[in-house]
Amino acid sequence: MRVTGRPIRFLAGVAAAFTVVIGAPAAFGVGSPSQLPVAAPGVPPADAGVAPAPVASAPVATTPPAAAAPGTTGSLAPGAGGADVKALQRKLRVRGIRVPVDGSYGRQTRAGVRILQRKLRLPVTGIADATLLSKLGLKIRAVASAPVATPAAPAAAQYLKAFPVTGTYSFANDYGAARSQGSHQGNDIMSPRGTPVVAVADGTIKRLTRVETGLGGVWIYLVDAAGNEYYYAHLNDIVAGLDAGSKVTAGQQIGTVGNTGDARWGAPHLHFEVHPGGGGAINPYADLVALDPNRGKN
Ligand SMILES: [Zn+2]
Image 1 (tube, rainbow, N blue to C red):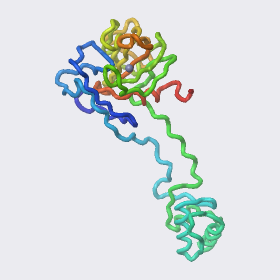
Image 2: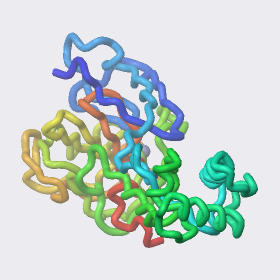
Image 3: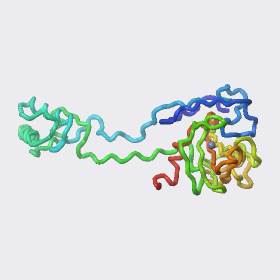
Image 4: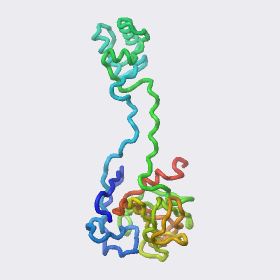
């Protein structure tokens, strides 16, 4: 039973959804896009009927900053500019070498550096290299010759291991959008009827129905080893042989896209929800984008 430790999920730019589900709690086996999984007895009301507002927090940086590590120095060369160059020019002037303090590493600064290098019996290059800068007590953060920072790696999916449909599809960040049944608790992945729907994680089918039930119509709840739940609604059908308790692996087909339930008058699509730890829904968009096989191809 989940009680504590609901994962904190950052939802940059997404309005926190705070949905009160109106009416009696869903009976076991009745899933709908706007209703949460049935809460176990003893779970506080917040789990039973109210989707908690996602807690916004800054994403954890996974790549080190491009700046040089503390205590290291780079070098300044003609053509450089900015505060580091100004600091160098001030140091030169303190040593009686007349250069403009204009933050621009031009001819005069180069000449001044050469004078200082000669004084200090360093190779006379006109470039304020690490040796010279450290003798001057300067530490610069921007290294002129530093390699271009590698682009940040694409964000990894936090929950999903596989994209939920294979084939033709499109989706948008429609979590929290106003719908007749309340705030939209997932993302709609528009896709032709019959498109394969797959397990997004290794896990177990928690519940399913092949008979249209509730707003979700034909739907599946999948739970992974960590207790995260995934809700697939409006399915056309479910793969034969699957039932509650069936083990599935990420990428394994579990059904097909349809428009059952309250989608019956609309275009076929997969309504997809993610419930960390089996609690309130979070916006699956970032995970979908991270796993989107077509990302960058459009
Ligand atoms: Zn939907």
